[in-house]
Image (tube, rainbow, N blue to C red; front, side, top):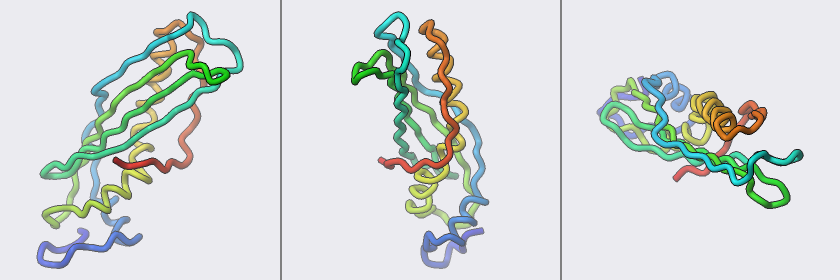
Length: 151
C-alpha cells in the first residue's frame, strides 16, 4: 500500500511511484470513437506516416480512466493523403488505502506508461483502417519511449 489514510499526501518520488504502479490493475480497454478518410485512391510511394497522441484522464471512485486520442496522417510533400483518428478508454482500478490518489501520480503514469498499454490496440485499429481504405498496410513502429502532453 502506498500510504495510510491518516498520513499526509505521499510524495511522487521513484519509490512511491513504483508502489503506485504495483497497485494498478488494468480492467478494460475499449475504443470509443474511430474514423478515417482517404483523400486519394492509392497513396503514392515515399510517403510518411505521422502519428500523434494526446492523453487525459477522468477520476473514478476506485481508480481512473485513461483516455488516449490517436491521429494518423499519411503525408507526401506536406499534402495529406489520408487521415485516421480514434479514441481509446483504458479503465484502471487502484488498490490503495488512500482515499483520493494524488494527481501527480496519475499524470506521471500518463506521461510514461499508458501508451504501452494502448499501443497494440491503436496499431491494430490503424492497420484495419488502411485495409478498409484499400491501401497497402504500413509498418507501424514499435513504441520504445513516449513522452506526451497531458491535458
